[in-house]
Image 1 (cartoon, rainbow over the protein chains, first blue to last red):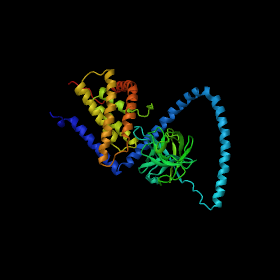
Image 2 (tube, each protein chain N blue to C red):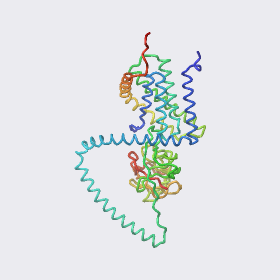
Image 3 (spheres, chains in turn purple, brown):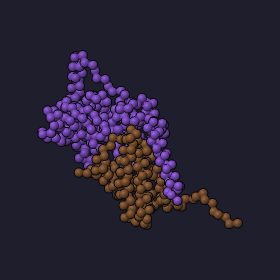
Image 4 (cartoon, rainbow over the protein chains, first blue to last red):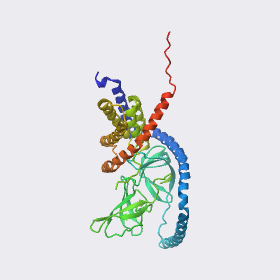
Length: 266
Length: 157
């Protein structure tokens, strides 16, 4: 008997037809509600499972961390003093800045209008750096909306919207390109994801100064992201004077491996 | 240097490879489709992309194992199946993504990165996890065989 007349072929054929139907329905946006339900159930189960495993991890982690507690405490105390001093200095600079703005009649920078969202799941395939969040079209989530961690650390942007959930692509995905600005020197460049390993700052002209430890923020030039969201800090510079442009690696400011509560910038 | 991070591991692919060796065709087909849909719904990729890729990998591997190789499974075959499943899956994934491109659903994937970094890492981690999953698969199969079924005994008149 020829293969196409067998039951096995019929089964395979039916499955491929059903998958083709799924592809079409997803592309048309007809299965948004089904995906919402799945995401919620999966997110709930994943959260419970993570909570259970975290308690075990923390217990064993504490045992291993005890030997380092003394040195960690001394280092953190020193860091607190340093940060307190820096905080006082910045507070003073902020007050001065506000006074100057008033004096010059500048418009006060508006604070971001944030909508709290919760992470449901991370992309398990490794092909993309995406997360599913628990709010969608009904909560006024729109395409390309920036996703941040308070108080303004950029995490990613919304790339798919369903009625009650949405998919956000993280800044470490190479498909997300951001106009960045080095806060200290004002150097502009393009920030691009490095497949979950970090970010690269590219196309910075040679006459601009960038150095390790510089903070990189969104420049607001493309219109996708408001100006001033913190992207990360320059971790290493990879370019020579003979190159046309400077290139640097940027470590993301947000801890993208431990995301839970996020905010969509409205 | 190749970053040895664990994220590219694909345990569902390992289970599919185990299903090819240890289960019958129908059970393997069911595991493949359910696993594929689970990954499709939790990933940011277009739906159906991973399901179809997994299904293609399952069918090709099933054909090779049962029609060409036709041998009793041993550890060498087990690891070879995981290795072959990983490579076939990646090739199928990129091919299906190209096909999706014709209907405007292509993902913006970095093919070079996928083949040079992600494929070797997936092969490495999948091979490491192959044996534990093989043991787990056998345990669940044994437990499942002990469960009562609805089959009625044939009564002799």
